[in-house]
Amino acid sequence: MATKHHIYLVPGFFGFANLGELLYFGHVRDYFVAEMARRGVEVEVVQVLSHPTGSIRTRAADLFKAIEASAKDDDGPIHLIGHSTGGLDSRLLVSPGAMLGEDIDVEPYARRVRTVVTVSTPHSGTPLASFFLGLFGQKLLQLLSLFTVYVLRFGRLPLSVAFRLGSVLTRWDEQLGFRPTILDQLFEQLLGDFSVERREALVRFLGDVTNDASLVPQLTPEGIDLFNATTVDRPGVRYGSVITQARPPSLRARLSAGLDPYAQITHTVYGFLYGRTQRMPLTAIPLHTPAQTEALVEAYGAMPGPQACDGIVPTRSQVYGRVLAAVRADHLDAIGHFDQPSHRPPHVDWLISGSGFRRLHFERLWNTVVDFVLLET
Image 1: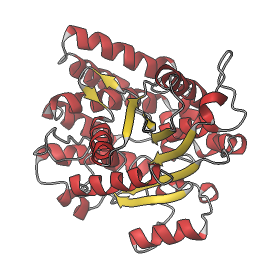
Image 2 (image 1 turned 30 degrees about the vertical axis):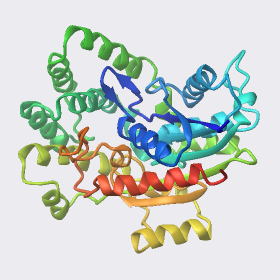
Image 3 (image 1 turned 180 degrees about the horizontal axis):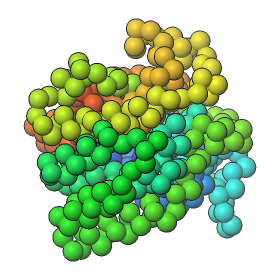
């Protein structure tokens, strides 16, 4: 009998795995299933349900529950693929001696893990998390969570909402303060466009974001330092990373985003997030191995500078293990959320960075990941 591979797709910061027809990893899952079938490999692909902004420990426990529910009937190899914070959840689960809670025996499943692939993961933290700790940042985080779901459902924000959000972010000043009521109004306007049933599901999801934001301080460069000191690699597991670097906001990048007013406004949102992400302390930038450095230089033509990022996570914070791919992309491009509506099912973008990432880049990237997962088979 052929060996059955179990692949777990672990979501990141905006951690919805499935809200009705909205699939965080929809395009990645479809690609994996089709490519494994083409190669004659039996596979089960599971999209993990995680607490959106719960602690890394809580989210790793969510991952354990997903594995326990679907991989207990055989002893096939397990592969973990985590986007953004999902990569940290995966690292913690396989770390020898990890304590995820009472009555959770991780070891029987952790020793079956063969690969851990992290995609755009903040292994050294991200300054954006420090911004989200503030009151304005907390409200903006909840609004951006709804923003993400809305765009994936309807294709784009109403222009009235996009204009107001862009205006708020353009004029916001840390020294002068803000008007949180504006963000509240935008939130209510977006929520009102969904059906009653969908609104209830969204309120529950976004309630998790508000009620448990334990993850946010853990993702600061200072917070992640403790995680790295206590989370060690498991012998026998192959670790690989996918690295993303997007264009910095500029006139050229703005033109690349297109002349459509909606694209221009949402590019402003990207610019706002980019500006807070590029503030990575020099002392927090990790050293890389010669092989990792060579891979980054080969991909980008030069070593990414300390301010290089994908709009959410500093580029050099994403390096861990073997660099599988380093691409010009923003934080969500690599998992299929880029602008290519002609594809079926369509690729829908909400973080419009002007990166130029498209389906061909997506397939090349994930083909490399499939090769890495099946390296020992």
